[in-house]
Length: 381
Ligand SMILES: *Cc1c(COP(=O)(O)O)cnc(C)c1O
Image (tube, rainbow, N blue to C red; front, side):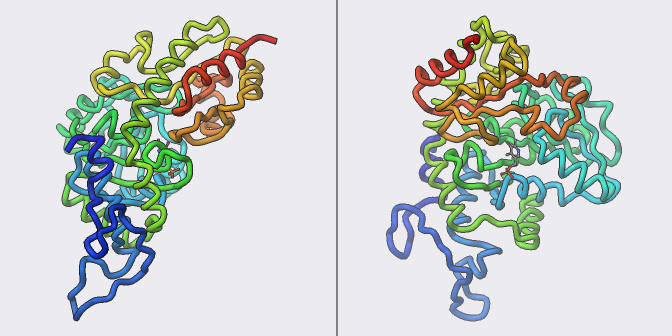
């Protein structure tokens, strides 16, 4: 089955007891057993639930994975992976990292004796020096937030594999429609399904996908033991969303590319960050690693600095000024005060995150409407 078909059918055959074509929401916390040790695969809903199992199978199929393990949020999914680290262990992470992941590494794990080295993963050459004999994971995102920088998954995975270090890719921005890290050598994929996979800004969730039986066993143990599982309703809503992932992503990419070109040519715009623009320094890698499209996220800096950014924010109507991303509706965010406020100003400046930078999660509205609104919001005066 190809991607668009899997998104609709994987893990979601007709319900054997009723023929229901759409997977039912199974709120039951418990499952009646026929005799001692005789059940139909489910005993207690924290441990396993049929609606959640359907979501896990579907997401695994989309990433080309053998195993899928769903969690109550993307943060809980990430924590499940990090829970495998022990005091003295070392981890290498991309420098441009989701703020919540950085917070877990620094505030939850560093105090427990798990140390992280941050590396600019645009340059594979910088990686080698960061490995230590205690390095247990390489954690990366591509494209990154908010500067849409890329990491070459295959090249980094080859380097890490040579040292026996598994690679984790947070694939939230790209989604498996655009990029399938396990096929490029990663061992684990982490998702915040809250974003593109759910796709409608109405359900928080996460998942880890892997082909490794050993990792799957540890993750399932942790899922049951720590208990941060999605509710059956949330699992169902996420499945409902993922069915249209292929359609949505194609439209997100088309709209984002069009707006990126429009912004790049606009005299009131100082810089545009979008991997689909030929001017992006890693455009060639983007074409190779994300063959179906370059994603729905872009960032830009208006020429008039923070005042112009403020004016832009005040003028948009269709585009909501809000955190999060990946929904059908366009969302605008100011990283310096929202997603990246926890990073000190000098560090933001060092990384090239201007205080005037605006991040746009381009929705699937009519592109002409979005462009007209952006044009009006960029007008001087
Ligand atoms: C949102 C996000 C997360 C965290 O997911 P939650 O569902 O909000 O817990 C992790 N990584 C990336 C890249 C994200 O955008």
